Image: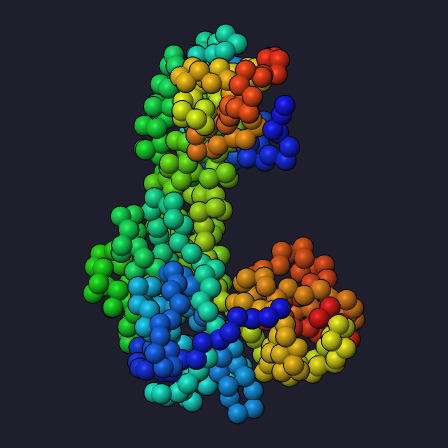
Length: 320
Length: 203
């Protein structure tokens, strides 16, 4: 699969919004406008470090009406593979990066009669753009945002200033937690709930909604999984006739790409399904970290999502 | 002359069955559909006490079957009986405006009744996982004249003369969910007057 060309951008502004989160303003290099997008979209940022290339997905959090720059927020993960640390330490004003075109895997439902947005931590980023779309519609909406504690409420304060009582804030450190069952009770027909945050939050919202009789078509969530670090392993790429080593701090997809193989991908967070790959042979277990394959497919061990998943095998052969 | 090959626009109807996670169950039926509602009602009382049930029934029927007395003996005050399909649609519209998430809608009746109710349900953004449709009784079709935009009710023949513009329409299997009707296209447009035999096909 050939990927669309990346867009060269440069960093025009950096703001430390919370102790862990930096917001970057990206402008196209030279003149020109960036592609338009809808709230909930993400881009993949290509970071060329000295010895390797990171490609990390980040939600677009600026206004979809703003076509001269994009805004992304990056939470620092000190124990991660290094992409967020690269953004926090190596990227400065004027740094040039490449980005892929926006893709929306978390869109607002246009026919909804009400929207309820639930976010925690850096999960607020896609919703920062969604509220711009909602602000222009006549459809009722509300947003509930939980943050770590004092000093971490930067995005919440911005939203509160713009939208007032539509925004409900919850200070984790004060034990202030959203009661999903109460929030979802007695909502009008045609209400949709959108959750972006940690896995336990997404699960709790799903359970509360279903307990209130909601059906799956009204429940939406997005959780990009950063590819976890893990034990190194080797993979045999049957079609490419290559054996590739996957180091502890690289994803399987990154290792395949580093070997010069053009593998399909879109979200790089285990969500979209684009990188799904058939497993031809294995002598151990696959470590599935994606939100794409069904439980039965994961148990079957015949498919893997190389963007986030790993393997504990001495021999692993993929159809790639 | 048929235009049916490979057309998949028509909804798939199934037998109504209780959707137990629902908190409020709204049943809408017409004519022969009353029988399907009775069958469903016999299964619903096993639900938890938190769930509520309401029934709307229109006596208007192609086949002449009326289940209003049987329904009344089964559900008492939770039943609204009206005489026409149009009234049932209006009652349902009002009922849905007061409903909250967790509602399930069950519909049983002719295809044009189902189509009218489906329009109301989708206006409330009720999706396929919240609404069930069971086709009962007559297979008569509502046919939309693509030339003059008039809907012809209870069509049972392969060709029908449009009640508004007088064109002879071939009744296609192409179904519009927005209109709740099958498309009718002029049957003798190429050679005026050259029509195939008119036979009853939707009994």
